Length: 185
Image (cartoon, helix red, strand yellow):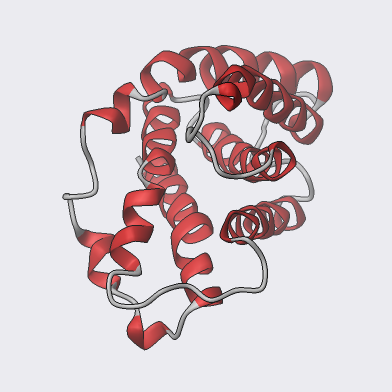
């Protein structure tokens, strides 16, 4: 359970807290949203985690890490996961980020998720919970910025990608690219 909780904290840190701190005065942010259950709805689980994570983190990740090592396997999974979402880019309004920024967002998220998945020995519950937390980021951000607006010279999606990649890079450095993987890699 500790790996799941840590994974959830890392997702919220990477995609809510850091972008908030980077783009608005902290005193003007609505931090109480982080404890609110109002950000969750049925799409939190049904919008991807239940259908995707048995394949991505429960099946593919262990195979990719065993064959390519934890970091390269995770980076390959991030590329595959981005490709999986390519058809949605033709749907107007689905995503406002350009594909390269979306790849950056999913790369950071994949590294964070691999770390927690490895800590929990590929727990499907961990993967689903983290994916669901990520799917809730836009609602967390809407609540966080309820009384102020983010100000940045970059598009906000790039701030999200850079924040996630920053947390991911920290995990890579701290774990020496092992991402808590304990197999042969």
